[in-house]
Image (cartoon, rainbow, N blue to C red; front, side, top):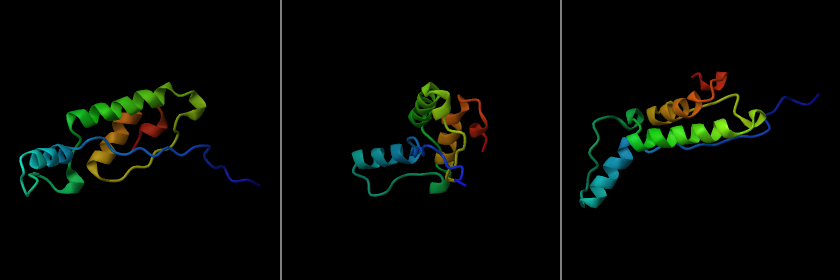
Length: 98
């Protein structure tokens, strides 16, 4: 008996976080420290990061039905979980549930 294995595995990195924006500001200003108001695990997506995640969702939704994800796993880091939620929201499937 052959196990029921997935036909494909999609690896998607999180969208741009506000930490990425803060790092760019620090680098551009020649600063030694990156100004963040929260712990790394709690850093949210930037506006651009949310759009990146929605763009991935549009791409996933454009795949033929049998190729679309049916299961999603995400890091508990906020930016990763939010990327998954945004990307999967357009699929309207069980994969969109956390």
